[in-house]
Amino acid sequence: MALSFSDHKAMMSGFAKLGFNCVEEPSGATNPIRIDWNVEGKKLRYRLWAFEISHGGGGPTVRAADEFRIQITNGPSSKADIDKDRIQDLLVGYSRDRDAIVAYDRRWLERWIDSTASGSRASPSVQVKDADIQAGHDNGIHHLTKSTNFGEGHIITMSPALLPAYLLHNNSVLQGSMSATEAQSTTPSPAASSIVEYCRSRGFHFEPQLLARYIAALLTKPFVILAGVSGTGKSKLAELVAEFYSASPAKGRVSAKAPVVGTSFIFVAAKGKPDPSRFALVAVRPDWIDNQSILGFVNPITEQYESTQALDLILRASKEHEAATDKKTAPRYFMLLDEMNLARVEHYFSDWLSCTESRRQFGDGKIIQHPVALHRSENQMEGRLFEPDGTFTNVPVPSNLELPTNLVVTGTVNVDETTFGFSPKVLDRAMVIEFDDVDLEELRGGSHGSSNKGFRFPDELPAFRLATAKDYAALPQGTHTHLSAINDILEHARLHFGYRSANEIALFINTYNELLPEEDDADLLRALDIAILQKVLPKISGNRAKLEGPLLKLCAYLRDLKQSNAEIDIQELEASYKVGLPYSYFRALEMLRSLRDFGFVSFFK
Image (cartoon, rainbow, N blue to C red; front, side):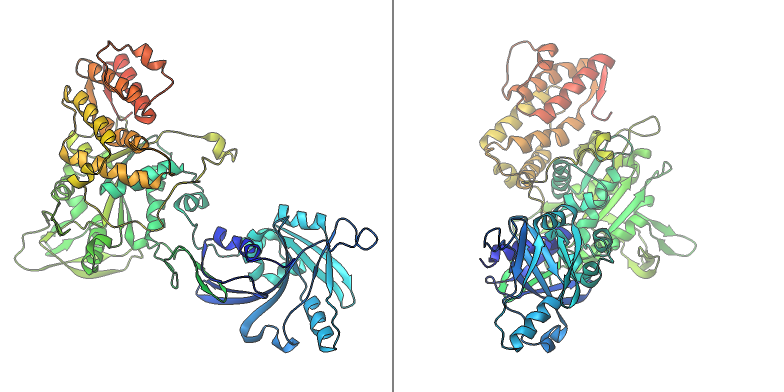
């Protein structure tokens, strides 16, 4: 039985694992299989003369039970056609039972050409043992030789994951002079196909749910706070997400999900290289007491504007935003304020907080906002705009600057005696993500985190959206009922959220739900749970007299998803097994225990 189109696609699976998208494929199975591979600015072309690996039958007197073969039935018209037009011709077989590829010395193909030229209708077969096929599947690449009438013939068996490496280094691998590890290490890997795989390829095994929470948060708010134990990867999370989404689509990439129909398998890089000009790591210093550390200042001696690393990024983002035909789809820029609470956030970041919250959207989609004042000079001022490579250009610095909507800010925080707390003003304008889980077993390679299966991460960040009342109106009635009840409970402690936060919670719920694996969740409880955890609980701070009653009621509601007039006991809460909103419930219960133990509680540990 000949190889099917499904077999051909199974043989190509290694390209996707390497980070290359198939943008064109044949309409069906053809022999040879034509492959065009765009890699590192070069177009490599191959013809795989591919045949099914089968036992061939005939009984034990003809062929041993563990002996399999390919039978060559077609090939190039003549030896002059081999590698014609810079297209490499290679001889391979495929075993669908073992999901293994066997690559053969091309001299067997030349033998077939000779026999055809002489008028013989012979179809040479090449044998390989079942154990050798399995060894290639299990070990990546397995090398063996056979004695033939043209000398020593080389054969390798391999997993389809190794096909790209074999194509690049076929002669060295076939001769046995290059191992599977060496071949893979010198094979380009432009990018992983998803943000989860990208992070793991860089040595960081972030849970898919955590990545989904962070991406949904930055799509909802331009300001995200990452809190947790030092050394858990807060800064790296923000940096890797910025890298993945700042990598422009590679040249020649087709955005359609399904490949177009053509004559060849065409593979292109899923993404290009990250753009370092779209990310800035800004280390916050304890002596930052005003906005000059972010927005720069006028130098009275040189009469020039002294920019900062942060302002450089803002100006680059602003330039890209102005150039975009559709402002909402302008490429995102990413600022990371590392250890942002080493100084008081209100002192150096108040302009950003106020101006971004002044944004308003009109019916036609246009967004207006109050600009930040940079200087009051009557003359046009210039400043040096530095690029990541150290080069700079003199650019005009406007007296007023609208903060571009394509710039998102992430702040990392640790809480200890050297840092400052957050005011309600800051927390009201941020999404807060806390992660303290440390898996040392995973660090030793004993586990690999939860599965990425089902999560729907975007290849590129969607257009900027400003949360509006329409987002809240679009929530299911059940979700609205839960939010309203929770807000009523918090109102007694003056910790309830306002209209703006309600709209942002609604936008987050809808955005996060679209990233989660599909599930029957009519009231969007999974997303509501995380929204309460990230937007509502961080604002809860105070003493026992103020908070104990509301926290007890809140825990009971998060557990049962209904209000009760019965007296609530913390022991009963701790004994709960069935919980409506588990993530926010257990965090709120932890805060309630701390409140009773210490007489005061804050979301930040």
